[in-house]
Length: 363
Ligand code: SP5
Ligand code: ZN
Image (cartoon, rainbow, N blue to C red; front, side):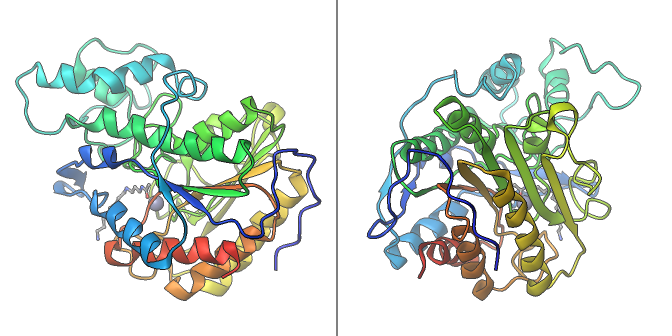
């Protein structure tokens, strides 16, 4: 078991008995439905699809987890606490600029400011902007993408606010996901970094220290980078070893933070084929680090692409392992916001997510 946290001085905590976990959800997610992503020389159908959310909602209802509520609108201000204003403006206007070319299919990038190119000058043309503001070609922009991604951020912010207002926990059913999005770049199905936006919202609303636990199969490169030089937000992640797994170019164990943030970043890369026991042992390592940090709250980047049958991943967790993950997170005794990230075994995603949440709730 993970060690228990020392009670934190946060004042915004309620006793947990008798409460049920609220889920925040917006139907606007369905306005984002990319057709294809670039993979090994081909365009392949997007793994990140609207039906993911519908399966999670069905499992929440079947399990009677608690009410599902719509998000509030928080506007632009909390987005630009984490993202560069020019990047947010790009996301908002990209579809209009793309469709003005006469294009009707998804906008996708095809050239990037990699080494030895200028990475400091945003081009004027949409083709250049798409590459300037992305890390890969798994981020289609469609007519409804901005509406969906801004709603997804509002879902995370609404969950964060529920906890500021006294809830012990909440589930932000975000889609699109967020943890690959950096301050100025989309990537890996992610546009706005919902978990980072929520963590910063907590910092701006009374929490002195916030921990982010990222249990998605992929390293949360965007979240790490956003907080890499800060001591007030701890980032801890377990993920497929980037030597052999997306995002390849971040997520190694020697990335421990920089400047004031030195020591406040923990990466636990795991091999393809990692079994549940080894995974849970790494989870305990991350939880012990979070407990020692003295966080006032924890944001969980909840991906269930660690599942044995996930179509793009290589861990061996079974549905029966997810309640254990939830229970060990609960043992921290901290206000906890779950933020939906990945998970592409669509028929099982609802069961696996609800298993984490029920494990957290003690059932
Ligand atoms: C939020 C999230 O989980 N994003 C993951 C982004 C992963 N992008 C790389 C996808 C690689 C697709 N591999 C296809 C394997 C087919 N057998
Ligand atoms: Zn993932």
